[in-house]
Image (spheres, rainbow, N blue to C red):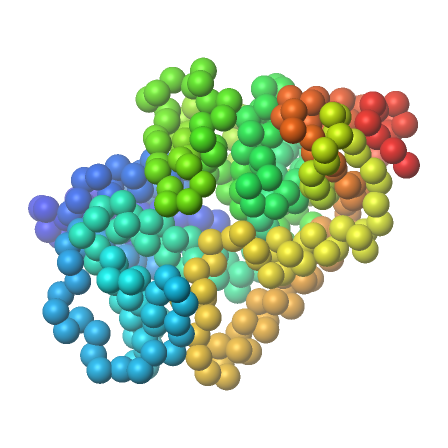
Amino acid sequence: MISFDRKIQSRQICVHGVSARLDCADPQIIDWFEFDFRGFLTSGLSDRADVRITVHVEPPPESSIPALDEIMHTPHFVTFERGPIRYVDYQGEALAIYDYESEAGQIYAQNPEIAYERLYLTILSRLGEKLDYRGLHRVHSLAISCQDFACLFLIPQGGGKTTLALRLLDDPRLMLLSEDTPFINRRGEVFPFPFRLGVTNGEHTELIPDRFKRIVERKVGGFKTLVDLDYFKGKIASKPVRNRYLFCGRWTTAESPRLIKISKLSALKYLVRDCLLGLGLPQVIEFFLRSGFRDCAQKGFIALSRLAASLALLSCSRAYQLYLCKDRDKNAELILSFLERDSSPGKLIEGRVPGWQR
């Protein structure tokens, strides 16, 4: 998988029919890319990949941004634009140049970790938008497959989705669809997006062999332990399944978790947050939001399609408020007890589950 230059290596991934290609001469960037996107690597390369990014682990070249006025400014970046070309300056630490017409970009950063972070987020953002147009929409959620149906756990960022996933996957009947961003469509189906698992401060990863782990230091919130998908061989779902349960997570100071059945209207606000608005998703607004009427119309189409997919998901799901306590094992035990009583489609003996309330 070597490309046109001996010093440059190329890797390509494909996610539900949308491809992205990386070209980079830094072996560390290549290793990190393979670790994170292992489940989507393809054996061949294409110059016609839907998204193509070249990463340069070096300072941005002088005069890389022409004389332009900013169009977007946050504490973390400043964005400039000329026609289809967008320039994003990340406080001098990195520079991204992206051509929307050719869907090709250049990323410059002297620090490999910063360069890779920009690559990782840019690829997820561009792939996510392209899949939006195809009617596949990401949800900020944990998704588990249980035999012939899916369960979505709409838990806010930092709410313990990954540690809950690690505990649930101990059950032989359950498989992982996605730890953080599954896709849904307008038929109420959940599509797998298996990704390396990111566990805050390495909680419950002590028994996982080091060869399956990578530690990432963060500017805020300690560190994350990333767990390679290879550790979960045989536990990763490969096909979409129809959703049956929607667990809307909230925290409680009580000693034990509990489940309360709620209306679909009550559950809709969680899908508005986690799918329609996409809070917590790696959308990367500096690339997702563009100027002009055409982009407003396109984003309006995406919003309507996300809403339609959310309503389709609600129509085939039973919604529950899941109150999570500090004891992660108790949280998992409640879910497992709940699912054990679903011995046949549509026949759940809800009243016999400890912690369940009507």
